[in-house]
Amino acid sequence: MARIITIASGKGGTGKTTVTANLGICLSRLGKKVLLIDADVAMANLSLILGMQSSPITLHDVLLGEAQVHDAIYDGPEKLHFIPSGLSLDNYKRVDSERLSSIVNELNDNYDFILLDAAAGIEKNVLSAFSASQETLLVTMPTSPAIADALKTKLVAQRIGNKVIGVVINFVMGEKGEINKNETASILELPIYGVVPYDPEVRKSFMQQKVAPVSIRKPDSPAALEFKKLASRLIGLKVQDVQVKKQGLFSRILSKFKKKG
Amino acid sequence: MFNLLKRLSRGKVDETSRPSSQVEFLKDFLSKHNYIFSNDFEENLEILKKKHLVDSFIVTNFDGSVVVTSEDSSQNDGIMGTAMLSYIKSEIPTSEAVLIKKEDGWIMLFTLLQKVFIVNAGSELSNIELKALALELGILLEENKNNLFEKNMVKG
Image (cartoon, rainbow over all chains, first blue to last red; front, side, top):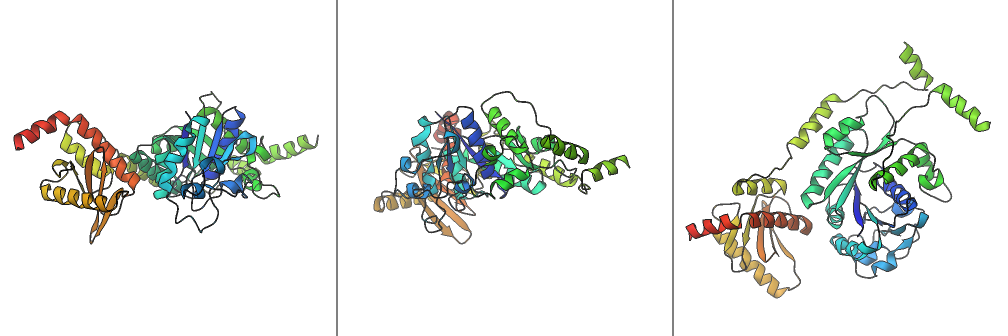
């Protein structure tokens, strides 16, 4: 039986898809059988982040009953499996996302983890992801609008009967005005599963000839290390808490010398 | 002074500050949406209405007899809704739910757990939302089966 987890946020641009891709890779590296599903049927882009955009059969085809689910499963990086959503706008209006539950159930026995990358918002497609999974991991940013949306998403997920297990705070820069980890936990009344620092390497991952998530391209970057810890936490391994520390001018110069040395 | 120099050495000055009033607002927000069920069945029906964002609901058997309702006078609505759903199901056997747009909202009819659910709400609910409401109602009904039986006996 797989743990089926929806990655959701409410607000767009919090990094749900990046978290899904990197978390999947890290879980796979920890020896887990992982399936990623792009459940954002309208604005799919998990395939772009994984560098797997040319997948002919997609979740759209399966939801429309025009293909078998096993034909839409592709081999992704680090042995993970992946079901992309269609990038074309033609089919998405015809798709009945409520069928997602039965598709996921069909695959339940083949994996340890099935991660559903949900759309932004709390509309029908997102409800379908909540309904198809037992658990939800919220991704937010350390700002009030993002946390407000995460809060509403939590309430909606619970209304559907889904268990919201925790929060990942993304894009943390350590600025004074950020809502910190303890406050976020207190507002959302949820445990914090990860604090991912703002890392330019994440952004640079999309700007390559061959796009690959940061956990593959720069596995020692601060964000990649936090994704690794997030995966460990999810499977119940003990990990040290992350300290988001800014590098001062002197340490930056020193590190440059160290690299050259 | 030392702090300023330290910040300057990092290459930029942090001009942000904690949005304390917004943090307090958000802390308060969740407390308004905590749905805690009590031992009072009628009160729990009100909580369910708020939680699932509906105005009222009626649960009937397939013969139209009301099992439970969030409103007082709904016997006629129950019979009418059940008859309408039964007619549509006979014409379109694969139909799962019937949604009726009113001037001031929606009526949604569907069956689950061998019962007919008639839900009134300001906006239409998806099948997933309707099922979630029905399942919670089903649990409440199961927990209060004996009480409801006694109540119906007295009414009857």
